[in-house]
Image (cartoon, rainbow, N blue to C red):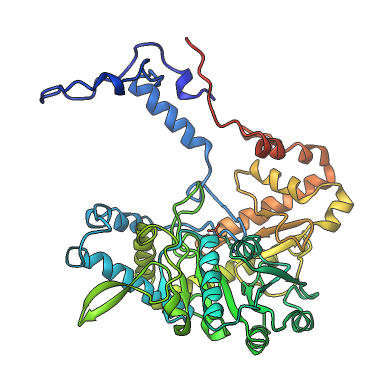
Amino acid sequence: MELIYEKGSKGRHLDILPVCDVEITEMPEAFKRNKPPALAEVSETEISRHFTKLAGRSYGVNDGFYPLGSCTMKYNPKVNEEAASLKGFTAIHPLQGDDSSAGCLKVMDMLSRNLCEICGMDEFSLQPAAGAHGELTGLLLIKAYLKDKGEIGRTKIIVPDSAHGTNPASAVMSGFTVVNVPSGEDGCVDIEALKDAVGDDTAGLMLTNPNTVGLFDKNIKEITDIIHEAGGLCYYDGANLNAIMGICRPGDMGFDVVHVNLHKTFSTPHGGGGPGAGPVGCKSFLADYMPGSTVGEISEGKLTLKRAPKSIGDMKSFHGNFLVAVKALAYILTLGRDGIVDSARNAVLNANYMRVALKDTFDMAYDETCMHEFVMDLGKFKDETGCAAIDIAKGLLDYGMHPPTMYFPLIVHEALMAEPTETEPREMLDLAVDNLKKLKTMAIEDPGRLHTAPHTTCIGRPDEVCAARNPVLKFVREEK
Ligand SMILES: *Cc1c(COP(=O)(O)O)cnc(C)c1O
């Protein structure tokens, strides 16, 4: 497809600006360009067609099924966008006084309280901008706390081998070293290995539960107890709360710090570079170290911003991605107490519906009731047909569907991880199951066709390594 710079012709433009009705002031010569900018020279029709065509080439949850496990591509109700586009939210300045920003303080306060309730925490900071950023923040809280206690010998963070890649990365970024613990046969933390891993150098544990294979670790209380007894703290990666929100709480499982991805669970569109938000919650004994400003009450109903006495500092300017917080609050309030529980139940129901419908087609990495996502293991399928997880994923594109997550978690080698989410109707799940079954048949009868899939999209199989190593990010314009 042509870029907009390659369209149109010299001198073509739109006359949509009104005639200037103020005195024209000349720009000082020193600031003027030597050459006019090389902007696109196109008519309104060309612009409109160009962007309509571009929009048609992208794929989102509004186009169809998007079962990208761990990422939660669920439908985001449009009413949340309406709320976040209200003038009082979009036109506010972060340095405005408490009186003229009372409504925004109220939003921050209500969202923090709701997240505390959902996660079983005592305080929340809305400052971190994403999940990984929340992890870094949470680990810095742990670090500050340990330092304050004089426990500087605690330098190790325990991370299970099934963890999201951001976990060990955040641990390293915050100055800890990572100790990996293997998962057991059942996909959950190997308790004996965990006992061996803890010691007086343990700063803490990072865990997500349900874990990245979609299973709820039944030993969770024992796991957090082992860490606490060793003198460490427990960090909950709550990027994805879809399976448990309103049903059980990280705080009750024994976790001390948690981050939540508002752009996964709480209805901010996800992908395309954000913005998202990764608020961090903690138990009261860590509240003194919180970053940025949190909302506090001065007197009956009157709110203000306060800084924690031993704050780790600012993790981002001002109060984070505030409009994402507005969307999350609108989402929580429109669902309400019962709606949140229903969403979680439906997320789990939809995942299990698909898992059971597919279990005779593809091996399940763990053949038991899953939470909001499940992992298929195509190892044997690959040996038998020569077609791999990537071929099935690519084949699904020809049916107009986004593939599941491929090759994650790392502990399952030919992994396809599907998260249908609670917002999909049953007919869509049936269609996806049908398509996956057809792809299996194709793998047996016509593997060559599957190896070269997709056949209907504008790009088929780009060289991903080359794209990552030698990205072409700049358009060099030829003179017309
Ligand atoms: C998505 C995800 C993260 C990282 O969140 P970002 O907002 O992408 O930084 C961390 N952990 C888990 C389990 C996730 O699914």
